Length: 160
Length: 160
Image 1 (cartoon, rainbow over the protein chains, first blue to last red):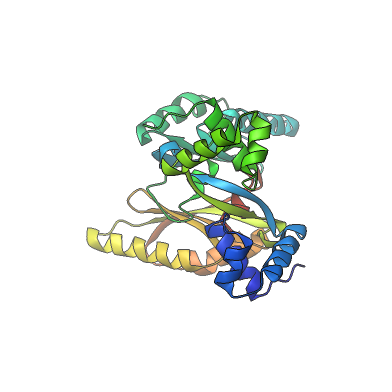
Image 2 (tube, each protein chain N blue to C red):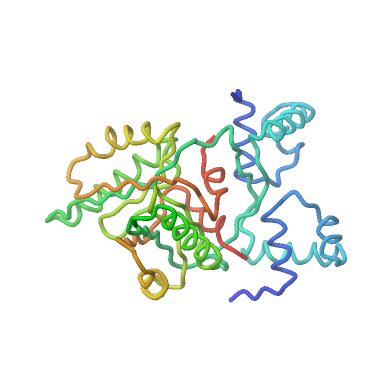
């Protein structure tokens, strides 16, 4: 169990906002010696609290429209087939650059986050590529009209 | 319209994997002069292609379980009330640390990503906090059994 104190949390919050902040900038903002900040970040990385540093991509690369799609397959008699079929769909979807994220949901469900220029274009993709798959029980489409919390998630997920 | 060439894309891919790579490390990996890499990154930031630098949090801070919840309200006679009610729910959910992301979906829908220690704990939260809200037409829960693409998204979204 990893214990974090207020200083750890303050460092993490600042790095989440801007991971380019230097040790000396963090030291100044948090009113602590550079050596302390350096040591804390080293520990946070060692303990796996900080997994890695990355960039968030901006508007020019972000799809204008995003929808979440829930796909549920029929449950066939042969269980082994279900597993292979679900894996096949998730792998195929994962390879597509406009599919931002894919997760399995329960035994026979898949959730995908799909981007596009317009909602109509995504609807067409869903109709052509997903609804045509055999043995589906349900396909539900949930448009992301406005992201209220976690709004950077699209810029985080988008492929280059 | 922003035009990116192969070098821009190669830089972005490397920075997405590890944003701590220095100009000289990037120059060496991509076999280009440091001045070129420096100039390209400057331009990518200026054009907003790189929005910002951040950290992804690791296992110790990530919830063990995550579900997506879709909430749909009744459409009342007074349209203005709907807007206020949906805003109220999204704001309330956004303030909770176990709610990783919230988006409005269409006119009367909300999608939320909720984390917890176990699926049962999240189900209890959904029962106690969401299903008790008045005037809901539908609450659907989709567990994230296994993230196949975009697996870092939880470490990106989690609050400190």
